[in-house]
Image (cartoon, rainbow, N blue to C red; front, side, top):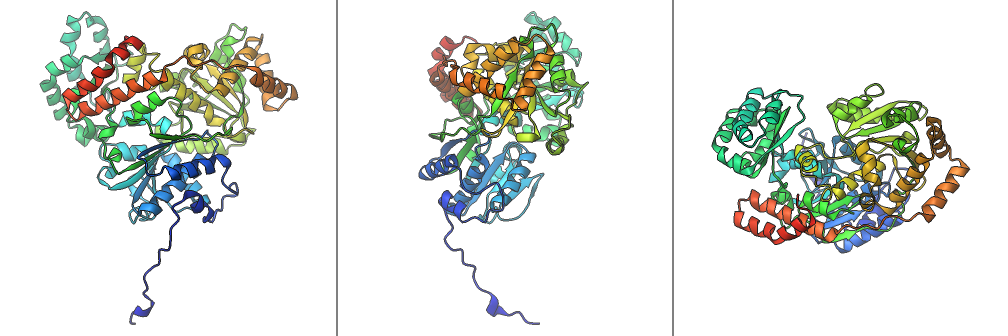
Length: 583
């Protein structure tokens, strides 16, 4: 049989739409929930289109305002314009799968990349964006480090900080590298003996010890040769748990912080040098999708810059009705966690905790899923009937989990959502940098509330437990950096909780909220209309200037441009000291 060459014709590309609104209008949408663009979505897309050539653009849309559709349209628009490779980064594999499913419903073709595999070759051919994870993008052996990229869309940019820090942090677990741990611990014993900390440092011999030690840079430099030998002989590049971070830090140990705790040693840069990566080169466009950019200093520490254009259309999406219950404020002589357990006993509920050790307080009710099975547990919880009293506990997961409407109407936020990394723990516990970390904590608090919220028509009960969290949200200076809408809800919840004389009073209040009781709705609407939020007494401009200085210092130190790094930091040193001596 001979080949009929007469049927071989060149494919006509046609005119691919670059305007994202026009692109949407040409889609064959199968998702029944999408009839047209919402007002805020259209406003965001049109304004971005006018500013699309700028290297860094922020898009702020509340949780529930259709941010995913906006981001995917921008990604495909950039592909159509440049016919080059465009990445769309998510914070987890679960969100990659969720975003891909939404793209199909919108009628958009995409490529996915996770677990070392591309789903198709559309990305390689410059025909569709690739949806991948921050992990795939920022690990030290990322295949994308050597790709020529036209643009990167960072979804949930407000949640990226700890993900980036994790990839630049080499953690040497005591259980896995007992000889390495012992050698490094011994290396710095003499220093701690000389400085009067021999007793507390010796306690690290017990793996359960919670002490955390920061090795001073001058002491690290004096022992650098021996430290390098120990790390080299450990063959960290061959172990899966260390090879990816080792790729980043192996030639930069002397510019990193060394932290020693009872169960591991962490080597991490004081400021993540994210701007040293090729994704931030000139010529690459970056779009940051976020539910909040109200903390520009935290954003600057994460990405090393502030977007030159921030697009934030006015929308009430995400401002759902909430009753916030604070059990410790009630007139009861009981532990607030035990009261919270009573409140959710017969309800389907999500429990958020900052650490796995904190999760042990809930083990008689629910245990966290295995780390590699979180996505499956979230799916099963979401699909469980609303009438079930099933519980889901997540540790240090304040983003990437969406449980709107009847999928979950009750949630517990237990303890302050601080970072789980040792450096941030050191800043918080030892240097008491509560002022400099205020906006970062506020961003995580806002993220936490968004887990069971979608739009104005949604409603639910949120229970706050843990002395540090309750104290934080009730301090006016802290509450002032939260959105005004959430401030009013916290104030209302505090008032309701203070009036409770029994657990039954709290149960009754929650029931009235969830059953849409007329009395509750009227009181809620009146309170939010009349309440006045706190005025923010925070110099965001100063905090942002300090954060940008730190980020640029971190990049220059990483590149070993020591003199320039010193100049950058010196320029803001007086301001930093005036703001906070610890800083």
